Length: 233
View 1 (cartoon, rainbow, N blue to C red):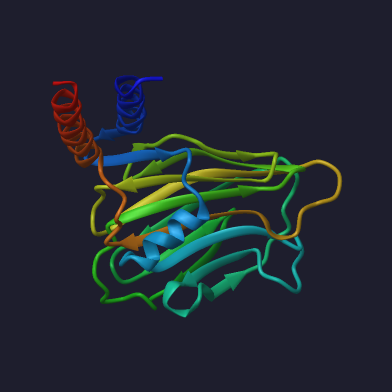
View 2: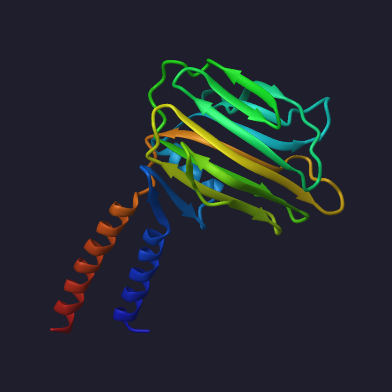
């Protein structure tokens, strides 16, 4: 394969990432099909803050022992500020809602409410990362997703062992998230966080936005193209 073919391949791959981002009614979302937990941790190591997250997980699907629901403190190793328990039913659709007004954070799952003022007075949230995890014998679907009344894509993690991410930006300082989760499994029920989703609130996220990606792509193409022309001469 010659250098021009490699360059074209890189260009199309980059433009493919750009095309995955969509904006509607001031709320923008970006599918991150190759994004991993390691990538998210790299963001945290390079200046991104994760003040809090909300989580639903399989736990032990009971009303004792480990928690199934939580509002997690990013400044304290994502330990729960408040937590709850839930018995999950295989294949059941469960509605959830998150509201944050800059002071009060509320997380409602299947009619159960968790709330806290622990994050009052902090700088505004700039981005949300939806994360879904499944195991080899399970799947997790987040459907009917909306941020501030704007529909965003479903997020589905299915066997084999999978983690999927979706990034949402350009919402208000106060925001509302709504959706439906479905935990499904075959055979032995997963445990703890083997089947789980989180909505991670972040500030200072260093994932390039679509316009930035486009400019970087075009700029890189221009420089590489100039070098190739000079070598050919």
